[in-house]
Image (cartoon, rainbow, N blue to C red; front, side, top):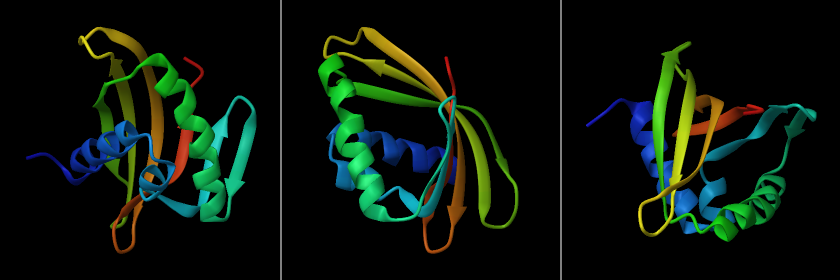
Length: 124
């Protein structure tokens, strides 16, 4: 079956493949902290998350991603309701050829349900 984190990312992968900003945003909570080479961004409203994903799905759709597989590189339960995970994403086209790969760190928080509350976008 898998850990709560593995199940979360399998379901998140399904949402990503829907290319629906609203479905993807259901896996996030606000406030949300996003760390990248561009700096730290704090997102305080869910419409901002949805707007981010409306633009964010476009490059993935343009690449022709048909399947994505999350590989949990590491996961740790930091407290009763907080988890950290490093996830490598392998993205495939319709014929099963891997066309992209990325790795990110996630902070997951659980109030009523597990949600992404922090994201570290790696430069590789």
